Length: 485
Image 1 (cartoon, rainbow, N blue to C red):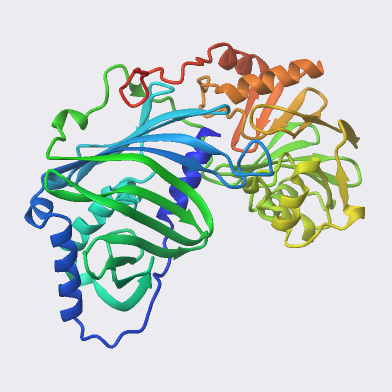
Image 2 (cartoon, rainbow, N blue to C red):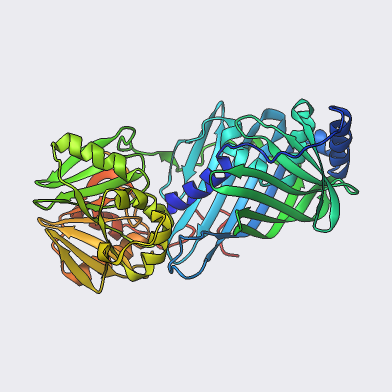
């Protein structure tokens, strides 16, 4: 779950899309230069443009709509960030820490020479970052910091386009778009009088993204918004509680791998679609972080795991096994919206849905239509569908969760544990501990644990080893970002 949340936020910020466009009769060049000069002056003039480094320390609340413990309301999670930019050398370090009832993560994305690596302090190791270059890796931080937007605008005036004027928050604003590498055009709302950036907006497949800045001040002669809110459509995603800026304080020592942090073990290859036979009649199909268990029930097939791309996984399963049997049942593990992305596929394939009661509303939304009553089986404790036993359990990840069990000893789950490595035990979080307690309470003879987020079939002994090694300390590294005062 840790990685999923981190990945969901990164995708929302990085995804490319066209910028908001407005008509304007302004002459190209003059308007742009005037607005850029106003912004640069507001943010400190030479103090900004000549700054060698900027450091932002931020405390926020991070919301995950559709991802909470309950399906009825949005829950917020504490988030701390320490973001350090060496502007003179185009390198950065972005450290983040968060911990709540369900997960704890402590990561740092950092420039090391010409590379970018991702450090995981929970596991004490690092790997090459998924985003290998400066602007892809740190673009999310640039886009969510008005000072860095002002700095980048000053460095790229040739990409700017004046888009007209608009009243925003009761004040006149000038709209100007510009581009940074590996990012769509960004539209800034610039206060016509002060030059402060009040908002940055762009459009993506996630909906309209709105980055809002307020309560501007200066530190070391450089301006910044002390308050920041980030919205995905109408949903609040990040609300800052405290933010500080320091100028020219970033040290070279930041751009090193920490002592005691080693390169992580080799990961299971999930780059291509695979269909693995786990036991006779039971297969796991998927790629990337999306997997579905398909169980041959004689005259039909049962699916468990509903990430987007379900139809592609079912096609791959049929091709690999030579089956032409229909998908008769689709088991919905829980109400989280990312695990419902394939439900429209399941509806079109004719499946009957087996679901916890609290997932029905999200299921209908994901399927694009209300599921007919004769194709909806709401769990009441437990159910048996062909060879699959389904148990409605509670974990610290979701208040109502459908665990699927298939003899001989195969259990399928999502978000609680993922066997990341070829020949090493992946670390467990609190949700893995919660899952093991729930399974122990069912007295099931589980020999193999499958995941909706990974290809590896994990032996029960490996899972037990991971759980027994779990460290509940929310700050195992002892670093300042998470250490208690």
